[in-house]
Structures are given as structure tokens and as C-alpha cells.
Length: 364
Image 1 (spheres, rainbow, N blue to C red):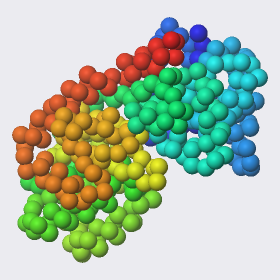
Image 2: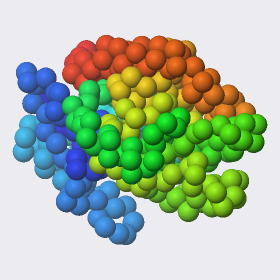
Image 3: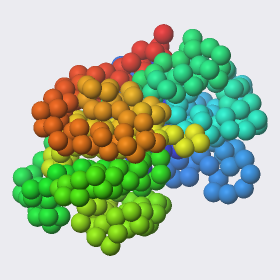
């Protein structure tokens, strides 16, 4: 059987969605052909105008006919799902839809989009959700869960480790002898970095001499907001405790995981904008680090409370600060959660197994 994956996000794009589809391609079983039709060269969408997706109708139609495709995997319910839905009416081809979370949330925000999305999903042969939360959302939306499966992303073990680089980062950021809390991600509100800054402030209010450095890696639209918040809450001396280190490369990422005492990202749901999973939690686990995560969206698939980390109410600064102290003040707990986390990531989140789950489901 010949499959076609059509997606708007694919390597070299970064992010969880592109990562999911890139690995879907890489680990797809050799016994079956998987073709890729992405928008990296603007093949599927017009740059401007109404109904930008109309280009995808003609492209998909001719690609499917030329390559004798049997089944289309739709990477984005809107707008690509519209094009595939129309093509499926013309040439009677099966298709399945992959949902990550926010795509479904945004696709159901108004009456028109809800109507279109319901048509697309009802006609779909199968639906793959990247987390349990989205699978439940979809089941509730369709009032049926019969053709829905949740298949989490996988994770790859790190191979880029350098003691020399660790030493350079430690010295550059003056980390020796301090308790290190680490965050990594796009600097947007739903990631919860603002709540972590407030939690750090609370810890220092209660224990002024507490020896803590909070490192935040990444770039994003809320960078200035976060820096202003840090200065407002901690005063002119805020850089002593909170360091924004910008974008980092793959090697620096693994070094910072290994150097920190705990990883934190208390993601929250803001009007349907939520964390679909959080591969970064499992990456921290692979480095044997315990994590603190927000109990929202698809995060509980990645983090089990008391197993590989601590789940907190992402809106509750007191709870976040207590979780930080629970880990930073208890080396035994940190180590136990970190060790369990690494084994859990290796055992339960192998990419090849995950893609086989998808393949087998599509062939039922």
C-alpha cells in the first residue's frame, strides 16, 4: 500500500509538529511506501488571497493520481484537511487526520470552522491524536471515539556530550556551587516561565539567602515581557538569580540538562493554546533530571506525577515554588525521579515503536 503524508511543517522546520512528521517518515516501515508532500517550497498554499489552500487541491489530485496513492495522512486539519476532503470526494481515496491539540482547538473556535472540521473528521478513515487529551477532545467533538487512537511522540537519546563544553558553560554563567533551575522553550506565556519567575521571587522572599539561579533558554515574542517581569519582581539585582541565555544549539542543550539540578516548564492552557505533549520533559529525563510540569493539555502523557517528575497547578505560584524546593532541597528525590524518568523515556517513548503503532492502526 502507498501512503502520502501532506503537511505544512516538516524538516528543516523546528518544533514538535515538524519533529513528529520528520520521524514518521524516518521510521516508517520499509515494507510500505510513504511519499511526502510538504509546503517547504510553497507548493500547497498561495502566499496571499482567500482560500489559499485551493492550490493544494490541484497539487494533491495530480500527485495522488501520478503516484497511485492509496491513503493520505493529513498533517493539518485546517487548511490541508479541506483540500484532502474535496479530493477524496473526486477520486474516492481514504485519508486519516493527525491532531496535535491546538490545531483542533483552533479549528473549533467558530461555527464555520467547527462545521468544516466535523465534515473532515467524520469522513476520515482514522484519526491519530498526539496525546490523550486531544484524543478525548476529538471524541467529545465527534461524540464517538471509535476510530481515534492516541500515539505520543517518541524521543531520541542524546549522543552529543562534552565535559569541556560543560565546563565552559559553567564558567561562562558562573554556575559553580549554585542550585540550578533550567527552562527551555519558545518564550510565550503558555510555557509558564512567567509563573516560574514569580515562584523564584516567592522563594527568595521567604529565604533571602537561598542560593538559586534560574536559567531560561530560548527566544520568542514574550522575551521583553519576561525580562521586565523579572526586574519588576526582583529589582535591579534580578540578573543575579535569573539569566536569559537566548537560543542554544543541540550540544549546549544537553550540557545544560546535565548541569541543572531540575528542569521546569509549568505550561498552562490559555484560551485553547496549550502544550500538546512536551518532548523537552523527556529529554531532561534522558539526562536523568527530574522535571516540574504544568498539569494541563497533553503534558500528563509526558510527565507522571511522582514517577519522572512533579505535576503542578500551572496557575498556582505557591504550588510551583513548593515543587521547586521539594526537588532542589532533596537530592535523593531528584535522583530517584531522574533515574526513573530516563528508563521510562527509553522504554515507553521509542520512535520506532510509536510509528509502528500508527502504521498498524492505519492498516486495521
